[in-house]
Image (cartoon, rainbow, N blue to C red; front, side, top):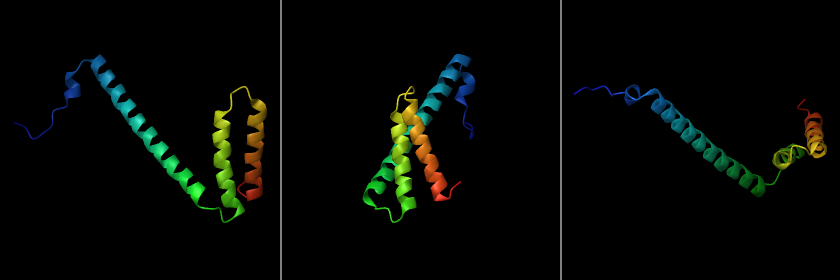
Length: 98
């Protein structure tokens, strides 16, 4: 008996190793996506329940909402995408972030 773990991946064929690597990568991505969704839900809950105390705080909420809106726009809707970009640029310029 050995105190060292056996690396079973070394005993598999190349195709099986690649399939295992893909399953592990997919599980990792799914876990990260789930965590991101949970964090986003928490953030949005806090944004809804805590009122902004300043214009910059309100702009943070508006920026998040505009990004969600822009992500839902069809690719060919260049007019509204440009409008969202212009407004986000205004936030940066007026907020002194530029």
